[in-house]
Image 1 (tube, chains in turn purple, red, cyan, brown):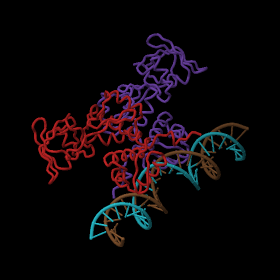
Image 2 (tube, each protein chain N blue to C red; image 1 turned 60 degrees about the vertical axis):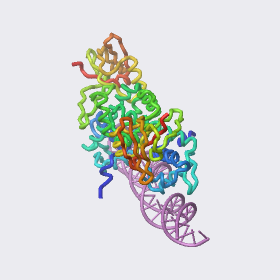
Image 3 (cartoon, chains in turn blue, green, yellow, cyan; image 1 turned 180 degrees about the horizontal axis):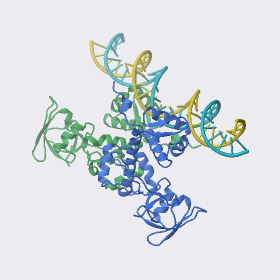
Image 4 (cartoon, each protein chain N blue to C red; image 1 turned 30 degrees about the horizontal axis):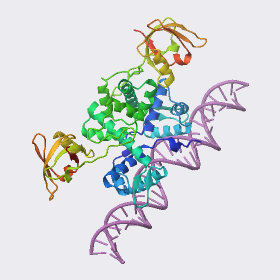
Length: 228
Length: 228
DNA sequence: TCTTGAATTTAGTCCTGGCTAATAATCCTA
DNA sequence: TAGGATTATTAGCCAGGACTAAATTCAAGA
């Protein structure tokens, strides 16, 4: 009589795929390709095709053979719920459990699939309803809205700009660590000295007049916005 | 080359079975029967037989057809790790996130499978390394040792005894709630007025000279030990 | 436009962990 | 001690989610 598939919350695998599609679509405009999702989740492309078909069945993505998947409204809601959880959990781990940046991502990745909405709500309360996590990423609201993002990476900056770090990529623990040690963290103000097209090196000066030369990979891990 | 099955941590299902065997063996002396585990985990007996065989493969239980399963040393260690996590998480939920007793069990049940040993350690620290959870159950040490338990249920008490509540069963949320409201919680001192064999009703008086008549189901949910 | 290499999909397997139905052991009681 | 009743096990099935190998489609350059 009652349709279990309808009421049961998506499995953790399903959530991982939704988040991947959301993130990839965010910074590539259109649909998420099979390969990009496969790479991100460390899974074979065949598994992705398979899952795309199932996600479509469930009404979570729109999928067309050979042209990738985009989230439906329901899929987006679900992805944002996970993202909200993830970022709140990261905040908690960093601020209350003394985690450092290397450790935080993986732990949050596992926990976000296990906690309930009640837990999420209580945790948000405990943390004082933050709107950004410690990496500077905005935390989606419980209603599924997310501040839009006018930031860009440091490698797209122009010499002379005064910029504020809005966030740093949290995928690579080593980079995160490197930046953290030098206090290149969200909130920090930078002046751009030079952006060298030749090799992608960006030279910046921080608030203490410390100068850093950042190679392209690093420059692409640092997001900034105009200091207003 | 390297045997994944050996290094990968047991799935959450496996953990649930180990915990069930541990709990059932604890209060029935010997081996856990297929049926008792099936009932506790709400699965079919056939599934239990199946899992017992696999757990034996993995070296986590000793299993003999038609006579139930007991934990091996490795199985016991693994079960205690889970129990430790569970009880620390419950403590956290109750003390820091404002959960009440109904809500706490299920949330902890899901979380215990998702958290790492690092998380567990940090959480223990945050909580001040408690040795009992708020229900009065002892929390196993990180090394897998557990204080032994000389408590018994109130229904086994004798009139005239002065007893201290050591813990309350946490399986039935409604009972937990009822007891909580009346402040019949771990640490509380009781005098036994009467234990009526006829209907199992136990009559006790608390520290404020409040008198309670507790039916058998309630009396079996309250564990006590002699006040020393 | 043809070719070719990359991306994708299909086909066929596997493992985990459930289920039901049928069969077998064990236990208890007359 | 012989039946039932209870408890367990077997057999066979299913779905989720992963994999590999083979086949297909797409896109881009010659």
